[in-house]
Image (cartoon, rainbow, N blue to C red; front, side, top):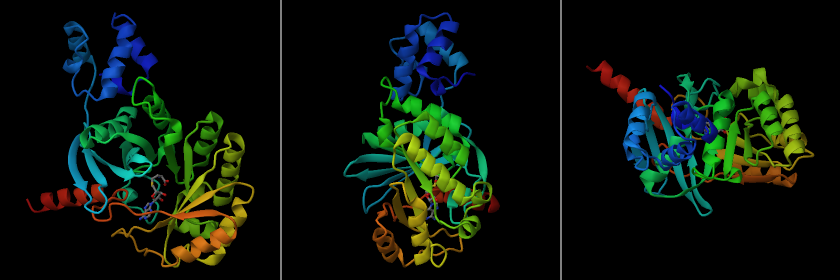
Length: 347
Ligand code: SAH
């Protein structure tokens, strides 16, 4: 079966031509799929025979809402989607003054093993397809009735562990005949996979790169982020400087503040020293308490921010949304998996 929705417009046109159809059918089908139709029968300007042909040869499995939680505090909506094969992933819709932002997943689970993160507890199950990434944006918009203007790739998974798919997703979601979301409205977050950062630098896309730094010194970083053993933090800073030189785009550094681990003044000083020559932005994140993790939120967020600012570094503290609905990465999926397991145990 063909995963038509993961194809670019050119590929779709070629697929339809190979079925003996005229080239313009490609654009018709592309437009329908990117509107979020859930069956080929809805493609009313296609001949019935072609709709039947597509049904017989192509998959179309939109995600189902397995759970939906709406925050009473700020309207943040968390979706747990069930995919065609029964796996579940999460997306979060946040309403900011500058527009509605959806945070999407790139993999089912994650194999990066960050010690403080709920998404990686049970490892990686599989990569998502481009269509499954696009569908998170599309169906969040359709279900909520809120127009999405921004996307952050900060949900479950490591985008640079599935970069070919992510790049194809970007091409799809950016397409003028599709959702047409501008690259400048998209952020991609990585735990620090250096070859991916280099590849992205060469492509020169106008998106915002976020790097999950979480510690400026190798010793601390290796303890909380296994990726640091493969791609050391100094090499990571080199890659970031290279990225800035090539693209001229400011990188955003994510920094989850963990009590007694990465919240010391000398670490703020070290961040400043390593960023010299590049206009970085440090986004301090109050640590979300993950049940499985031994780490506790730092009480030094404001002091750390001041210390960075004293060095001339732009540092912001991330406003936490959806605090009442398990809105941070991987938590809802973990909960659903736990409940499913308990259900099986009690049968
Ligand atoms: N794999 C990518 C994107 C997904 S994680 C990456 O690592 O960047 C999105 C962000 O949430 C990352 O910065 C991640 O480190 C952070 N994060 C994970 N668990 C967290 C927690 N318990 N508290 C605060 N931030 C967390």
